[in-house]
Length: 481
Image (tube, rainbow, N blue to C red; front, side):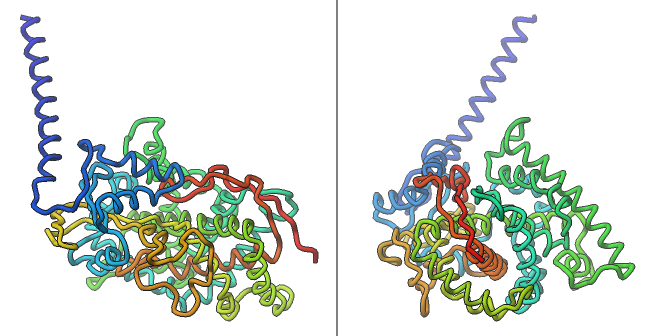
């Protein structure tokens, strides 16, 4: 009986595997059964073209995946398979305009499983509803007129950052320092968290979380995804303690309702008088910390890179910033008027973000079948827009590899061509916040130092954000008082 039982068990196992493989291949083949799909190939089941997509970034040329296929298919839209999902990549200004202007009409935001598992409460409602909630919550703090009162705090945080991390040092590693600056600033403005030791408790787990979000979602001990989930749980527990203490302080009048985003979230209710629960607030704060951290720290890092490489650009930024510095009395902090004078510096920052966009692109999901450029896009397919499809395209930016801040003078680039913050209803709500923290960083940087790169040909890795492979070590040359 035992051999017969084992034979039956083996047959059942083989049958189940066969059926599973059949379903995978059938589903994969059925994705090609729609009429008039965009040109391209889906690659192997599940794997698709994901490896080539990512490997181009690891080699420092993420745009190659896009432009190779535009040239091969002579089309501004092509099909592929990314992250285990059939996808259409929409390129150029027309593709950006279509996706950004049809948000919540034909398409909706889509995130891979790794994001949903690290932010579990985001599964309780649709991404569309989550986006609406955040759009209602953020304007009080993220609009230019609201952020004006925080410029002095930003300057204070930046001065402390440079005093502790840069001054009295011959050389520094820029990327980790930039991350420290943007993370400290986010903790201060979002949570009123100013104690360096308390901020430091978040720092290492936060880096693990950020790495886990962009990793392959395999939850096994030792994997980046597993470490990311553990870090997320740790930070969420810390945030819940802060939230409960803030609730108590608000009730006792020890905290202000308008002091930061946390207070605003705790006191904002919907039209039915229902407020968000503590876990939901913790996840939203966590998302804001992620969003306000990695992209801005990358931009600050690459600003240092290009200022070191291009002395004539540095000199113009230095001239502009020193005119502002000399107009200040001792101890006087930056203000809104000072920021408005930093026009050339912001053009430089924009050109940095054009060449090395901190946000490489984003995914959407088709809500229904629709037609784009004469091709059918099936319901449920994922759609990807790429910043590089316009940023590195000579049609929109002549000599795209040339660093030229003058591109942003006057009316600047054509609509839907410069998209470091996305566009449409889902344009990054922290765009103005990012502008201020970057300009405050530039001001405090150049008025203190000139600097040289220690690795002249340091490789840039995109995974999925651009990062100098060795962290961008520079030698500092302090300005004489």
